[in-house]
Length: 245
Image 1: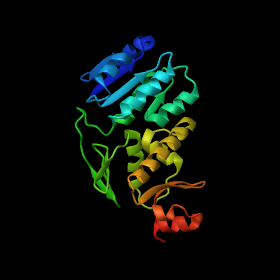
Image 2: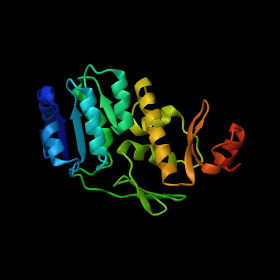
Image 3: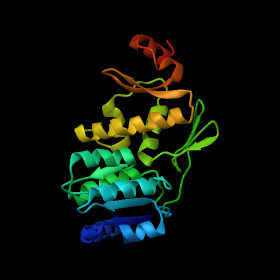
Image 4: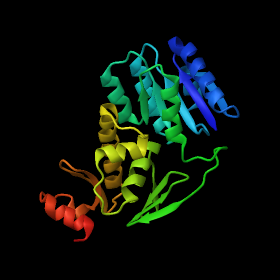
């Protein structure tokens, strides 16, 4: 387990507290605490299992940092920020954060981190399980997706969503089931995150020219569907095509 915690000038103490929490949870982990200025000089690439950004007084600075990191890395990324406006929470998710935590609960923080890291072995070793679904190949240990034999960069949350959708081919999965499969909980905040991550995932499938897309079934949930069926307005026909009936 390797983690880097990035903080602004006004959040150094909070970053140290988070580092202590992670050290107690993972005694053998390598955890580095650094400030945003040093992080920018070093660049976004870091061989990490987890990266945490701690926000202080300047949320716009965090937005820029997320963009810089996501240009070169796809490891789990969590933003910890107390007393922040909701518009920034939404913006950070859109920019590539996997989670935004706004409470001071160490237990909740660790539960979220555990959910992000659950596919890694105890020493951070990757255990691959391969699933083929149409033109997609998913390697669960590495959280790797290839479409038409080309790798598609997904965040860990996006991968878990796709993994859940492909694990039950032809099934329409309710938002509650999908949220619990990915985060282990279901509430209003999680539902909002779900919509954002699904939107990102849908766009990436389209950019990779996959024959599949994510269909929103009105009042029911979500399912993978063939792209040529996506534009239909007949929900009954869509269900029949998904289930083969």
